[in-house]
Image 1 (cartoon, helix red, strand yellow):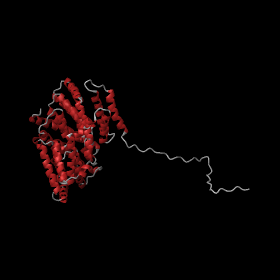
Image 2 (tube, rainbow, N blue to C red):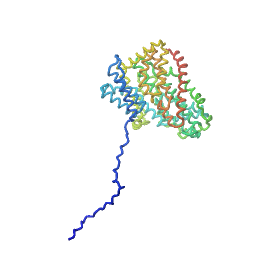
Image 3 (cartoon, one colour):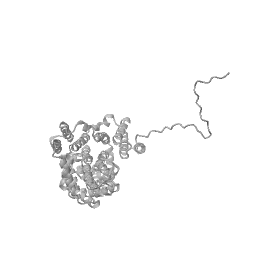
Image 4 (cartoon, one colour):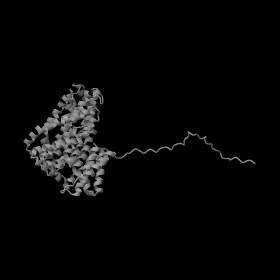
Length: 505
């Protein structure tokens, strides 16, 4: 009797061999970490924790105030080390202040109604109007066509055109990235000067450095030429330093040293960082050709010009007619929106404006609360007592504090961030050392502009110009310190003498 075969097919396995191993399971790879940079995050948190729990708290400072100071130091550390984007890190630290009940929700977010912060935000929109209409390009090209027959004249044409439009564009970074860098790159390429090779020294490298360093003087010249200037005045008033006729007072004190610096900088750079090309006969031709392509001024440019002149005029006369600077800026933006020069999508797409609102509001809020809770007063009193123990005249104390404020910027990647973190503290120290208030407040404000070209990361415009690839990093640091020392000498000699004439001290 036979056994029936199974209807199902059989699967024969291959004969096993001593060297045969079962197939390995596929390895599961961990997805790459996309969150905060762990080492900078750990260092920033450690700085705050060590300060909070390992550093003895002075008797004159409350526990809440000391805790806020620790969070503030962790915030500043994070801004320097960069564990997260600036806005994200600021929001994280703000959340910590609320979760730990260091600040109430209302106190933590109070600074977001600060008029200076909104003035800065609106200034970004103004800058977009200049770029969108082409008015900024037209003004710069006119100066190039007039003065650009040689390299030195070309650098003066670019520098003076920036000074001319700076009162209406309170963002040095926007002027750099939106107007002047594209023009400089076009001029350099026309002269066969290209980034990241030997031809960069032909023309492009010199023009880049000249424009960067001159922009510091342009920003220091007018109150509304840079956002940090407005913040300095606001913080000074918070410490009791009253600035009457703000726009004119700022200009009167800055005009002599700033103009001297603006005129000297291109020549000094021409000597220490000379371009290979000395004559640029093609530059005026290129500028005139571009102007011809642009055609006559369009209606949008005329509207932008009129709005600019009206806005600057109201900024100058604002105090006399009782109109705050931020209201003037809002009126200007309203006109640009009404006439269609900008639309709301232009404002929404200006990410840098909203990012600045986020992180700047956090820093200003913390700094204001430190003043309210008495930390700044305690710190300034301690430093003032130390300087007094050295038997220094107030001017000696002033020089030490100004130098410290200036060179500590090597640790910062933002001028406005530097102001938000340190301006109030250093001004309070100056006041404690019996330095005349307006003199100290203005000097710190001008210094805030002058250190913008120290390094490739010291300001937004420095990063923009370095990113073009024309200047090597070692040259950035070398030229940064040379021009910094030059500016310190100019402002110390011409500035101090002029301020004595004005009666500031």
